[in-house]
Amino acid sequence: MTTHILKLCVGAESVEDLAQWQASQRHRWPAGRAVHVTRMWPKRQDEVLDGGSLYWVIKGVVLCRQAILALEEARGEDGILRCAIHLDAAIHLTEAAARRPFQGWRYLPPADAPRDLA
Image 1 (cartoon, rainbow, N blue to C red):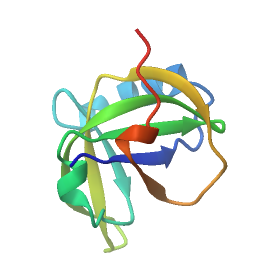
Image 2 (image 1 turned 90 degrees about the vertical axis):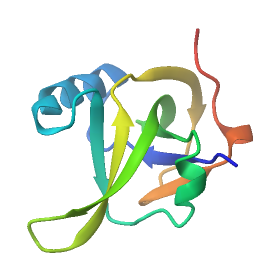
Image 3 (image 1 turned 30 degrees about the vertical axis):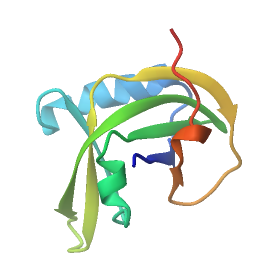
Image 4 (image 1 turned 180 degrees about the vertical axis):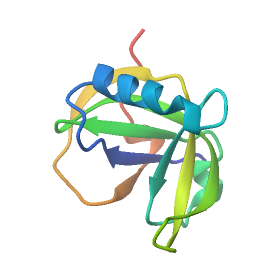
């Protein structure tokens, strides 16, 4: 069964801002992918990898998503092991859905996920 991840997009003012930042980092990532590194590894990784997406909360509103392609261990310069979430480079706009601030990330059941815009 699929589940998604909901994550705050800290520092971005808009979807365009997120897209520009990811474009500026493409030289560091595998072709056709974006990579987001987070501290915690999803315990429900099988569900996330079964068609899940990362839904971005920008300025308190879910506005877009990117398909999750893989999870990979990544060790930071500080030696701490983290989770690198490999995302499809395509950013899909979604219906706007307000969200309160939270730390880290949350699971998002498919039934609660905002629909893609045409």
